[in-house]
Image (cartoon, rainbow, N blue to C red; front, side, top):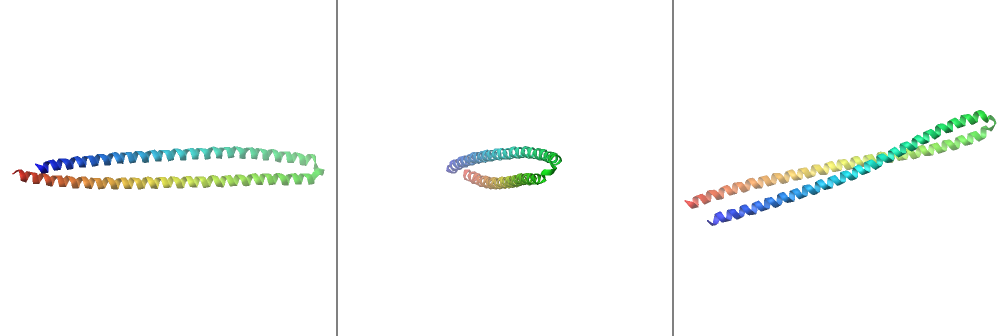
Length: 169
């Protein structure tokens, strides 16, 4: 009779531990899901910001190209009108070329920054995937350990029931 009460207590303790484990696991999974969702939103916002910045740069570059086209037309017109002022024309062309080179260098720098940010975003995505895989592996190992523990406890419970049966005889 004492063994029957003891096994019920053990069963209750085991059920409580199992319930606590499941609740803790669900809370952990919820927290991880929330954190991953938050990081994903942050990454999306950053990507959108960089995309808007790239579009802005493209628009600025288009304006620069249009400006360059207008300058070249203006230079041709001046060359026809002012053949005698060739020296002034060369100085003006040099300054224009320097300005265009400066803008091109700025564009190249911004393009380089953009690609570096893309690489950082890719690395972060890979890190995120790696962490997710690690958490899945850890979760699977915990599940397997719990299954082994449950099967061991079921095996132990079967032995105690056999002993109870012999005591009753």
